[in-house]
Amino acid sequence: MAAPQKKTRSTTQKALIRSALESETRFVSAKQLHRRLEDEGASVGLATVYRQLNALAHSGDADTITIAETQLFRACAQSEHHHHLVCERCGTAVEIDPPSEDWMRQIAASNGFEITHHIFEIFGLCADCRAAG
Image (cartoon, rainbow, N blue to C red; front, side):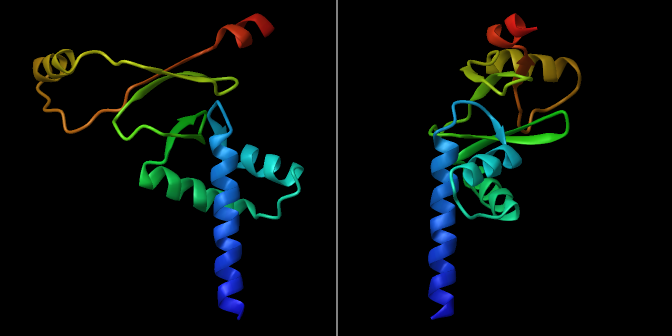
């Protein structure tokens, strides 16, 4: 019976982590999400949070970016490739349209490159964080 309980616990923890991430409107770190889950009374280890968030990112169910050497996550409902404008202070994100594919190909070609893939995120401070100083 130990194996089914472990699987049930893992499934329960996975669901808790997914639900917590889906309720966030901004990018959050594994530590921030772990702290929130603990504050809500959930018993889940930080390593489990990291593992589950990375699994969600790998499956395409979460976006991930790195700011100041910290990996951040945000639930992603879109199945297509997309891009963000991200606040470096609070993690607020807005989905944006990138420059055109033609522009990217032209820039690459003019510099002797052939595009294999791209990552396009713009970082800055949102209006609330700028106002807060």
